[in-house]
Length: 388
Image (cartoon, rainbow, N blue to C red):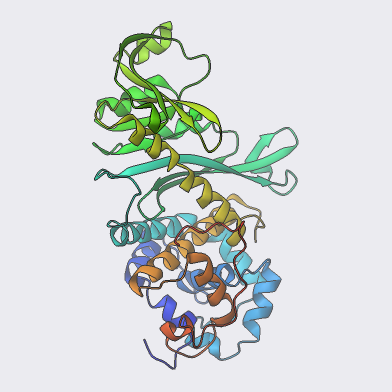
């Protein structure tokens, strides 16, 4: 990386552009395009994410003042509201979704050795969804309720490094449990879910694929106890049982034994009941794995707070998905940069520094050194950070 290049240019050099062009050719993204191609479009959308731009006019104004420096950023075409809006409406969102998947694979390798917080060699996934509210008048295609539109961001997160490995964007009315039909289970992996995913026919499919699941039991859960295991109450475990389902349809859909664990969370003064098909791990480890599911909640809150996915630059389904996938790709890019450059700062601090130094001409590592780093806003105790 050249010291004479802007920090934005150095960040963009970390991306596998050849593989990006493969995604572009797959969906003919640059077919008959003479100016403002898909690579320039992605750079502009990444700039909008990194600098917290709120609208097309905001993006246009900020980039216009850069003048000839845009060329060195890899943006050779004139950026206007019209051509950016047209690109958001017409460039196939699958280009950016496929590219984000490439970055996911790269980030997964970089964070594979990260500590999980639990002594376990297996891969642990957290599965959950978040709803993004939309205006009914502007987004009629995403109908959620009679007077409300919304979309859902269904995410399967690898808890080593908090890397989202699977993302599906749907209308808000799609029930969370249906996403289990789209997953390809990994044998030996753990899937940690809340009660919204408690569908015994789908969970039995995970079981037959030799994957493990951990979920909360519902209050009306009916079962018969087959065996009670010894427990150590000082760990918070109140009971550890092997049970069979007794209600007709659940028993029909899941005919094999389940493990039922009742756990008392002293911090929140709350009793939790877990169901799992794993009979090998200690009961307290099962409770710890479920507790780690909150990393995905932090991810949803973090991405809503810091990436531009609550106010959209376009109103069509394609424009919304383009913005979400470029936001996810930006998140992954910064996570990759943190690992490859061995940055000590949290992801929040990295983004704060980038937001005010993208156009500085200095080696990128100098921007994160104590000597050159711009003045940062101290992180509030309420602020969520995933990569501390």
